[in-house]
Length: 488
Image (cartoon, rainbow, N blue to C red):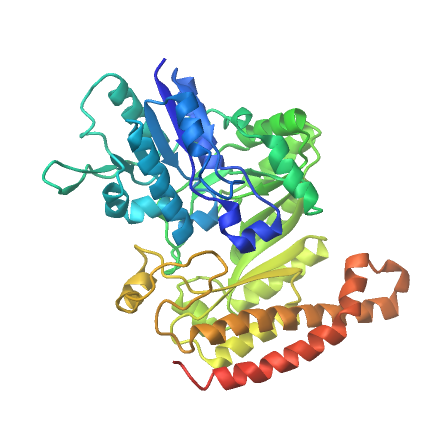
């Protein structure tokens, strides 16, 4: 039987910030591809890199499985793979070289390979699959098996004998998502993932994608896989998937890893009804936009169906910056959505982005004030990262000569000339977290005074840490003031 080996190139241990969270997710996009290939009669093996701290075992994997095709197919549903983290790219290049030594035909499909096809072809890959790749990969594998022409398959980049890079044209994004079989979860070592979540004291959670793509046009956000399209699985497909995972792996908590969850009109309401009909009780968390959450009875339906937390792309407390980003949301919408979600007992978390073009100290202060006033349950703070093929990237690309990528997701280096330098923004990220925790601690202190028996352990801990956060935030505020006077 013709053999295909799949791998991915996101190694959680290479990304210290993410590995320390001890909440790794399997490569969902990779196992979607595996299931489609198996449905079409191919023998598929998986070299799952997510939990590995080196690529040493890939040689034994290749020698044991002897694949005809080795495909590095990254999980396009993991937002971390949109960024090129140099450690991951280097690992991909090493795997390509080892597979080529064993006479495998090597294919790569990832956000980074889509953006930088030439680099991967120069590293030895035979073909780069651009954008959404399941069907393209299936056609490529079939053509390789049957010695057919590979060079007219849409969605592919290759290097010809003259050394020219040839693109075969874009493939149309697939709309009928329910046609895809459920992911090949049996290829995942589920116990290995469970043990890491348990070690971190976290409830084991699996990732599910209900949609592909995002139709909004934030000018810093890249869409190398699905473009500006937005296609959705039916609620029936997703409920069937949830039921399978709950019955097979005992999972009741899920990360809905869509860029935007529940955008399609009435989808969330139907999803809620089907869960009730099936008597499926789950908990899940999502990413969404403040404006979408305010539509119709969306928050009610989300809360009823088991939503526990929403990560909102708040980005900034300055309307000037939101408008410059083409975000399409307002501070008032963020405030209202946060208030309504909290009333329903749903936790709210903010993605915060510093360092956008022309951001001033006043804009930063507005962001910190928004966090203090709205008191989300969690925050994720980063600095603007220029992703290829975005309007933002085009504005700053001339500054990207010395550093064009981060080594890991906690790098936080400014790759273009912003208002302040990298040292300032790294300190600002830590200062924001200190101020956030201090504000939470004060809020919990007021709560314990009013209702002493309702306090939780985690809340009590923050109250105890109030002196620490108060002192360190004062120290870091002074350090920031010194740093803001230089952009060297």
